[in-house]
Length: 156
Ligand SMILES: [Zn+2]
Ligand SMILES: [Zn+2]
Image (cartoon, rainbow, N blue to C red):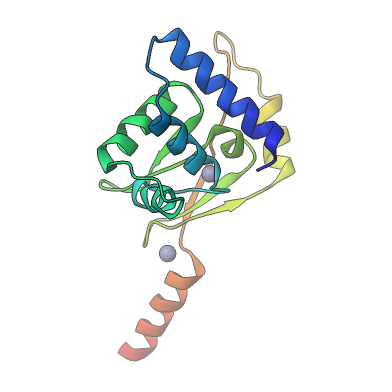
């Protein structure tokens, strides 16, 4: 991430914490830094590990609580990928791609398609102000498709 975008995100986080009268703790900023180190989706375990890699100790519950704050601040968005699994990503990034979701294994791939983006931006909805979008295309990933084909062959 370039430093301009990082400063922008950090500033909006500071403004949010000030507005909500929440404490500007070192932990919260360390977690924000961890979030910004990802260029795509991540889950809570991945984020926790990333912060540990930076040799900073925060508990998993602090990571979870701060993610809730970041969601509320509109800095991070979440994707419920299955009943037990949630993935997160920076809202700034979520707006730049669409998602291919494999219904067999729950994996998510990101695709950038200018046509989709242009189309969605052109939609005018009455009595509604769009903030951001997140598009999902559900299907089967190539890994799962190959697996299914191999299993079919074995049955024959
Ligand atoms: Zn995404
Ligand atoms: Zn799959």
